[in-house]
Image 1 (cartoon, rainbow, N blue to C red):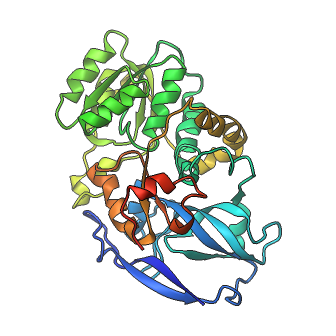
Image 2: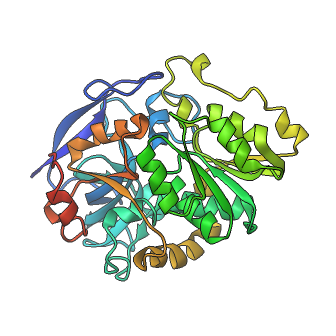
Image 3: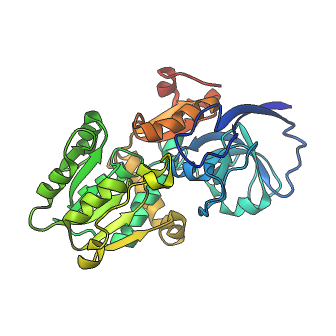
Amino acid sequence: MVTNHQVLFNKVQPTGMPKPGETTTRGTSELDLSSVPLNGGVITRNIAVSLDPTMRNRMKGDIGYFTPPYVVGKPVTAIGIGEIVRSEAEGFAAGDIVYAWSTGIEEYTIHPAAAVPTFRKFDSEQLSNGLSITTYLGAAGMAGMTAYMSLKEIVGDLKPGNKMFVSGAAGAVGQLVVQLCHQAGVKVIASAGTDEKCDFVRSLGADESINYKTEDLPAKLKAFAGETGIHYYFDNVGGDQLEAYISVAARYGIIVACGYISGYNADKPEDVVYPKNLFNIVTKEIKYQGFIVSSFIPKWIGQFMQEVPKMLAEGKIKNREDVTFGVYGAEDAFLRLFTGENNGKVAVLIDTERAEKWNLKDQMVKSKVWK
């Protein structure tokens, strides 16, 4: 019998900032790993989970989001990596390390049989290339896939000399977009919320940066646009920054609509800021496309896995992570996504006992370790 420490969903919260202890709460359950019914599924000892802004939408109740809302009293779920402890599923055995789309923020998760076909098993090379396990939740995982695949599918061939605006550029997805565009010869202007983050995105290859909290973002975009306009916009933010881009967009510009983080925690729906110049999408013949990255995975996953982890291991792509250690640290870590206090991809290492195995021991020694 083991005690399974968990972060549980506690209260539907349509508006405002999530509150630890209210929106979510800490809990435990008791599990007999050798006899708990699996009904054709598997049980994993969870290694790490990804925390992403889109999880906030699942806390709002049934709003028609593309994934179901969280259930009160059940663990909050996220994309995660775990080690199979026991399996009743064909093709998976104890000891396999797997990437799962729905992992509880807890030490152990029972995955139903229907979920197992979506698992991706790690191979020996991925586990021995020196990358931290959390890299596979960020730059070599969902965040990287989001950046890489949406550029491939929506923009297509990035044209050297063209201009790109990236909002939320210091975040998990934005930092990859900046680097991929820079490597393609695209001129990049990137926004972030602190001077330190602006320095960071310039170190990744951004030609210019904007501290949207202290600088005049529309004016800086206008100056960067010059006579050509800005050809591409990778939008993680929406709101005023989207409006500012539309004003300086090149004709036939392309907007990759990845997120709308400026509106996720609005106190009232009417408080969400939407562009007042949307008609310019028509007059400038702008392509404005949203996406769910899972739609692109079947086409692009092979190419992505061949290229991106290798580039990370060789240092050709930089990756900044914001890792929290221990299950119960997830509540505070999630808030950092919305306050701007995060520094890169936010993830939680649950399996702190084996931090060295997952290439995170040195970082953990310098950090607070939660249960």
